Image (cartoon, rainbow, N blue to C red; front, side):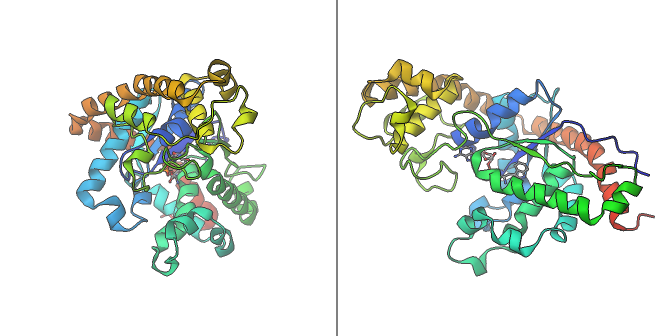
Length: 353
Ligand code: TYM
């Protein structure tokens, strides 16, 4: 019989350490991560094993990867994740993720993974040349979450399909091993929870500053398309002022933003950075030209994002301390993960002697 406690609310989320984190990562996920620390037990992961699913040219090489892991850790902390309240660690230091991912590779169906739109986007036209890791990446992501039997996952809109897959995997595991799960003492047969995506706020999908139809992303070649958390005040201000817009004034209601993706994006960013809603922003700026709105947005972005970059630089000045934080977080994460992966092995019949 398993000694695991019943499922209780727990938050898990992660980001890939490939290049600098940007405004989309911050508004889509990090802001929510910080908030949830006050109400939940939270585990935040630097998903370094996910980073290597892409070509080496994307993540650089071992030295770049190590630096990027430290940089992501610094970004989490600079944005407000508090290691006294929450766990921060890097994925590869907790072997249970890879072990559970293998079990999930045997649970998830080819057809499910074939439907993943992110694989199609990332693999592009040359599917035959994508790594097999990239294809089964969503199984590892499900394992990240379910290694801790986490119930809530704060992410941006683009992760929704992956989280639906995580729910399908949890459900199929619970069904396939129903009798064994009950025998382990989980009377209702729910060993894994069906995690809830937490996708909220006015900026769950931040778009490129150069093209309102494309997501803000690390892989976009133009630096002007995104605000990095490491950008200084001049860079932030310059990128906002040069952001693509249309020639019309701002409408007085969100309805008027339809068909105006760039305007909609900038209003959403303003709302998210100021902790209000697009309605409230348009109450203040309805009728204004971008010549007035952009400087206000630039000032706000500098005020909110500027200090994060400065704090990241301070933290990165002491890499040994960052490594110590990751070692401590990994030890805490391993403690939660160990009885879960042990119970999974017992349920499946992977003999432990
Ligand atoms: P990643 O590293 O691409 O992005 C990290 C987080 O940032 C969000 N995000 C955005 N939100 C709004 N607008 C954008 N333009 C934008 N770009 C990125 C993402 O939605 C995400 O929340 N597969 C995940 C990492 C992952 C994970 C997990 C997440 C691995 N295991 C377990 C949650 C739980 C990814 O590649 O995110």
